Image (cartoon, rainbow, N blue to C red; front, top):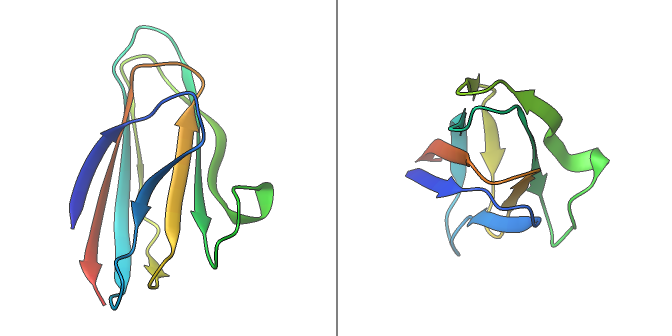
Length: 101
């Protein structure tokens, strides 16, 4: 699985593990395509939980102008798990790489 999305300033659902499947997330790439620092939040929400500090993957992390952050922490995701995220302003793209478990 590879998926790229532009982040908005709203906490939005970015990826949902499909019914009957599991994924292992291998890497998350976040690119700031602007000349200003951007801050991002990503959350791994399980069992219908909302985004919060207790399920944050990244929380208000600064991405340098025209910079990229690579998080290669592997973690399992199960049916219905959701990754949610947002940026403080436009100009941020997130790419997820995972494999079926």
